Length: 578
Image (tube, rainbow, N blue to C red; front, side):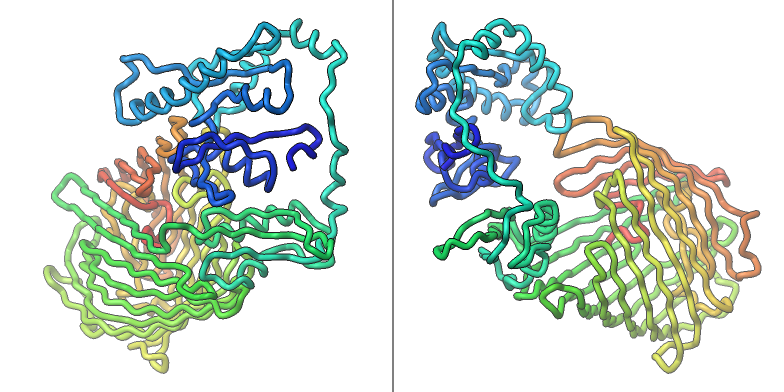
């Protein structure tokens, strides 16, 4: 009963089916607030008592009538509805949609304003260019509201000093005093309840830790299965106090389709492209198995099938089998001249087992077996090539990922370190070992973001076959060179990127930035050194869109080479189709 809150409260929502106003006076307070703010198109509707509810602004944006029904004889109303757009501002589909929304909101607002009497008080802050979608700029509008209220200072002071009081209930005890005697899981998905329960940092018989519970809810939502995850503090028929977690599955999915594209040209006749698509289906079973199918054409033609399967309810341990077909056109360069072109065509299988240490850290061990043919199509390598490729490898890998965004991160770190061991006993054509590490460190200040990438790769005894040589070139990896222009058994790269957000549009933020890069590859460990590093830089424009990030860039190298790039994908990761 919202009348039992310290200050009696009502939330106003709109029935999405009928368009009727719905006044919420009891039930779950978080659900009521969530329904009342569910702007269509921005937030998913909330189902309460078999009604699908969205933002109350559609039916009663300034609910003076609701305050009257609660017994108010004097109403203080604050009108922050958006003004109608002018003809000059109606320049796009988005602006027309906003105008149609304004029609609905303005009509209900005007009707409520007409009901105000001489005893009531109306405050209308000057909004300027702010709109209801400017979530990130909300703090900047606070002075506008303060100024508008101050202008009504005398009237507000008179109301505060005339002896009127609002009935207030006693404030509920601090949440740390709440004893959780039972936990109920309301789960409409295919996942087992234990998957959800195992992520709760709350146990029966313990005092409630609200901060830990909030973090747990975020972890459950990150499973990418639910449209919303909420909780309620409830009491059962025996009078015991408990916790109910409500996990509402998405009405779409669990099928997802992603696309990626890379285009590059060095303006001298060398161009490159790769077009890829990935199909993902998650929550295949009660433990959260996930199938991912990736295909690409262009520089690399590939079709791979990957199945990730947790083997315990907490998803601590997992197995991951993979099968792939791959054909790659491999250009071999020497002194910035393309002297030969290879074609590597084959298939492989991989089986991995791993341990998720927590939500940010993972250890895994993979075995890979592959067979392929290698042919020189044009040119001469200058050294003998084994035309039958045989791969048999064990790879131990550590992964850490705390980036706050996959595409344009503002904070966090990413590290991937691995050790590879290959031998004839495992199915390889020879014995060789490699270690490599790569990662990113990100920090930001307001709209400015800085990213430091590193990559260090080493082949023991210079024994790695050509299909396992490290490659460099492309946007952010010695920009100005074409993708994979450099190849060798040892590699090092450092990239510093700066990018600044240019707009405040939530669904399509735009960034402009630059990169500075230093690195090289070497064929033998004796050649490895800092005295012959290659240097490059780039300027880029990036947009984060509903279909993925888009980048347009131009790069220049110390050798005078210039290249242009158009990417749909993340150029700051070593693999853009991870």
